[in-house]
Length: 163
Image (cartoon, rainbow, N blue to C red; front, side, top):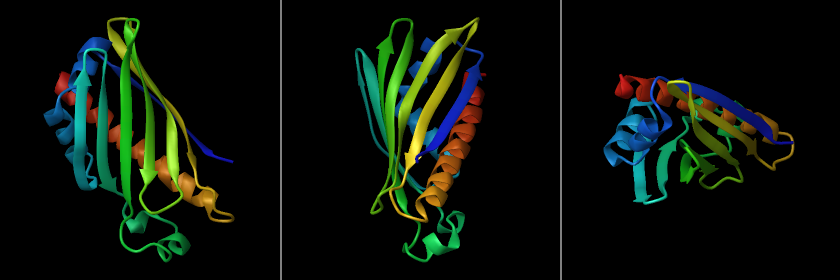
């Protein structure tokens, strides 16, 4: 059974102001580097009139993996994250995926960025899936935990940029 991920972030700026940051490749690069990610790389930021696609890569430290799993994987496994943002009324929604290169592991879900009072709220809902008997649930937990930590770091970075 997949491991759920649910994160809510609050910003003191309207959704449009937060979303404008997502269209800036320099912001995306800074957000990724600020997170302390291993081998951070912005693959692409493609803005259109009705949305933006963001693709980034980074690695999960093998030291964060359960020892039995780390022994089966060489080095730090690379992850690729894709966010497909679209305008949705007065807010924005995105489907996202995080895949682990060379492993049957992924995290998929949706994000919504909406106005809330004088600010905005970002909701992230997803689930990690690793279809491997015995170890799958442990790996799912690691992936969900790593992404939650990344999102917390990104929240602090976004708040600092909006200040």
